[in-house]
Length: 440
Image (cartoon, rainbow, N blue to C red; front, side):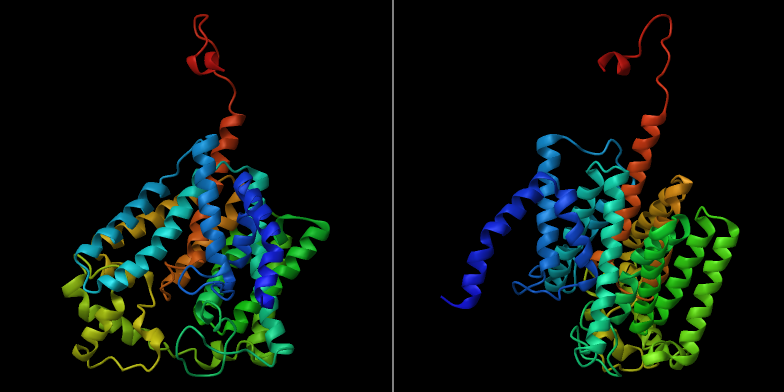
């Protein structure tokens, strides 16, 4: 018996106890570690394949535990947000595209990932959250962002430097996140943690403000470490929305805004350890995105109405590149991605898919805007920042994208439940008690 087998056998009782605890209370035991591991991607692989990482396995465990809890205990949310049917319609359309896809194999593979994310979104939104568990969810997301930036700093200082790209061939010096989600997607994955940390820095007091202020600076450093220009732009959007919607004295907002602007300006000017260098040196370089978008525009007359099939953009790119002489041939594998979820949607699932996706984002924005003032800033900031980053990234199949959608929708259900509890009981009319009160 080798050492690995002995290790697995020794841990099996603890693993079994943890699984039982997750099924008893998935929000408390399964959701936090899943949220923490989101920015790490598939770094911790247990089995080969798309669902072989610890993060994906925890997601499957979380989804199964939530669904079983909903079926057996009926402790579901009292309100179903409009986001649920909208994203289910998007999933259904993507699934039906398998029948006309020009790359059915790629459609099937990508559809599994989309379905797992949407089903987990539905399970989370249908689960009954309260303010305590919502805060636990947000804290876990923030902790994951802080942990992954700490991991990047350890790589740079103790492990001989950043390891470089694992998600595909690339050029240029290694960037933080290349071996995780890809540097640009890593920056986008830090936006929701940044929104939570910045909002708490603004609204809380004492030691909590100091801790969240330190977390905010660390997350901002992580975005600079990725070298992502879109990520830095999205971070500015996050800060602007938090300062706009956060409940705090104007003087405190002014101090925080000035501090953030000065720190970012200093980082871009002096570029300590190379942080911020790529954002400054390559400020006019589109990294091949405009060439990819030109190929997508060339393919639009063929596919923008009905779509080429979910996950089929790489095939479309290969087919249409020769018909787009003004587009440069890029050596990097990432250039086969559309680098925009809007281009991805219209090419892969056509105009109906684009409309449904935009409707889903619009519904989420409206839901975030209607939240109580004390809850509004983090969801709105994270969602707007993610929308900005999604204009430059094909991130709709990533867990962090759906974590933002889930955070907004869960916040909506918590706010609705709070309003219902706060509403006074309806008075009796003509000596009759309303049926709802009579049942109680």
